[in-house]
Image (cartoon, rainbow, N blue to C red; front, side, top):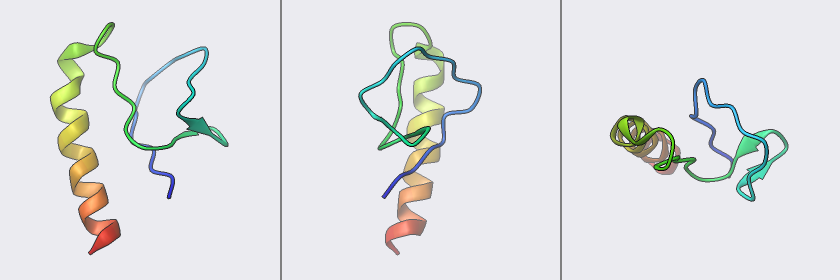
Length: 52
């Protein structure tokens, strides 16, 4: 399952990227810690729907 919910993210490389999408949840606590809580909440909603 590939879930991509990272909006407005720019990056050079990620081991968690497959076919242009993040596999799992992309979090950047080094550069964007203020977005972590929202990203986790959005991702939880998405996986809840996917696994329901």
